[in-house]
Image (tube, rainbow, N blue to C red; front, top):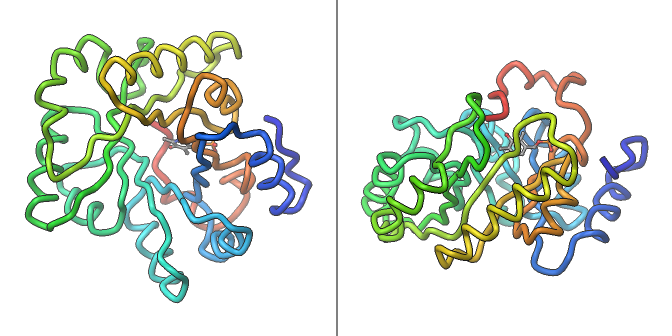
Length: 231
Ligand SMILES: *Cc1c(COP(=O)(O)O)cnc(C)c1O
């Protein structure tokens, strides 16, 4: 991790922003942290925030309703019965991990007259703890996945398994970038606090950084218990 957590929030944002190549956006993952911290980040110019739990996110969105509209991204596992509420509260979903979910999102987006941006989650190495399409599944289902109007497929999302070396992570990210390119998808949501530099170097368009910006989620915001595990 390159960010110094003893530094003020502004310095952490600066440090990360200074290292991001053009075309790589910063998604500040605010799950497990309170609305006041988000407000501070907004004051530092951050507009895009990632949350993985609907209820927690909506409570914070309500507390921040006085601010100009923010750009909310849903990054957690999306349950079928939460799709409508998630689409009402988030403009982008990073965790579309099955054809069935994708089609449900498209149908509800049409009913709600919304056009959410979608990332398909892919699993490039075997990892029983995570969902997602294998590259073969993605390619096989691609004719159906690409036609989800009014939802907008914009990219692929991946999470590396724990314990990879930086060169191994970089190879996974490069494979994700190549698969997105092969599908004609511009976006790649990849890279977290521990590996965003490798992801940025491999062509990530969104690095999703939580603890590297806001500190540990275990350190007492009172929201930790509500937080879904990383998937
Ligand atoms: C929590 C989470 C992140 C951020 O993780 P950090 O290691 O705190 O940066 C990124 N992506 C997803 C999908 C997450 O659930």
